[in-house]
Length: 102
Image 1 (tube, rainbow, N blue to C red):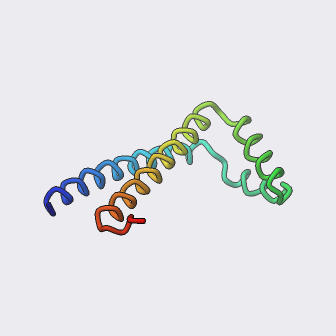
Image 2 (cartoon, rainbow, N blue to C red; image 1 turned 60 degrees about the vertical axis):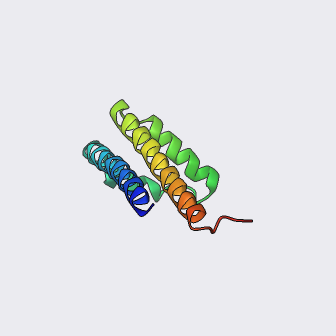
């Protein structure tokens, strides 16, 4: 049974490594098209409230190029898929160890 779990773990590891690799490439592509100096300058001017931060993020996203919007969206989707997959791995690991009983 340990071999089965070992193969399962390696498959999950390769899948998550591929997601991390794509996220790294997306981050690099986004980094070449984003002016971080402007971002930090504008962050200092925003209101430190939830509505102020959300308004800033939405306005900044809407005013960027289409390539940056696609890159950021793809990065967020991949990050969400990565976190959900890690949650599934943790849940299955806990259940397999007998810790998920009520």
